[in-house]
Length: 120
Image (cartoon, one colour):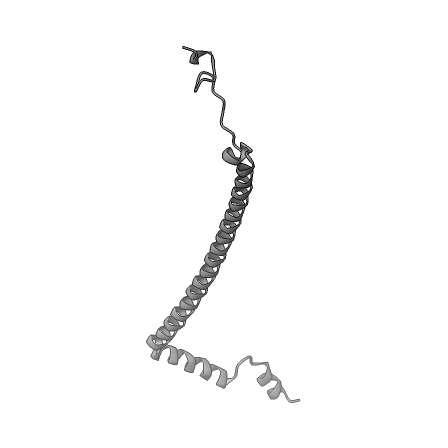
């Protein structure tokens, strides 16, 4: 290898590299408004995609929440209907739990002839 070829390969960029850099800089200077416009369009498109994804995710979560609430309401209603049926059957048999359910009334002394104050 000759000394001249070694010195040429040691150069990081030749004349073409400098010309390319100058060309890119001149294109940026010349079309800066178009470049900013393109960046703006890309950013707006990205923002729309993010917002749409967020909306779809929120909608899915809302649907799941409504479905869970409806299932819970169905379960509570089924439990209420079962308890009502049991109490109705007890009422038909004459059992006082059929009328008052699992919460019997409190016996208050002196009310409705239940205590010493009622004998006047």
